[in-house]
Length: 185
Image (tube, rainbow, N blue to C red; front, side, top):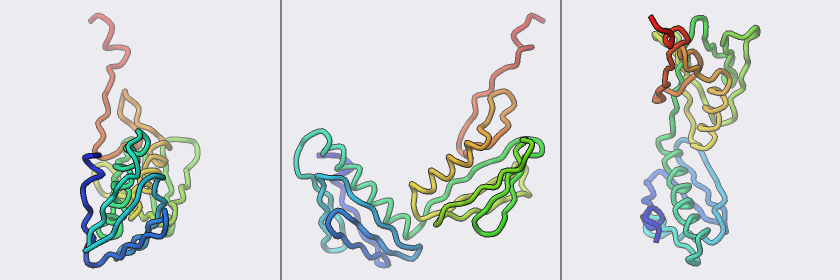
């Protein structure tokens, strides 16, 4: 048995979960999410818990067992608490400004500003008054949130010499010494 897949998931009181074939729908205070489960996995809902079981013992089915349980758990956590991802902008003149509810205008040292559209279900809070400006992304869907954060980071990845660029708040950048450091003094 999969160590993760065999753990039951408790359904909070505010959450409605329905299984229709391979499609699982979860509805809660933060919205509604649905996803298709991998083949070879069955879900059983009983007494306020969800248990995931697999049909066979082949390698792909064992892998899908833990994946299916994690997908359902992430949907339940997403519609109750939600997920957050913080990005920090580092560099002289680098900044982000909100443009309406679903657009962010980035100035990242290029010859032009970059207008970034947030996907549906993702919201952003921009803190410009801090020492390092930051963008806090929030969403109920963990997969969409991670992809959006990666797309924003890809606009100007942090460079290793001065650390300028957009990085995750919990990311550490390994700094390199410059050319002058290698020469004898």
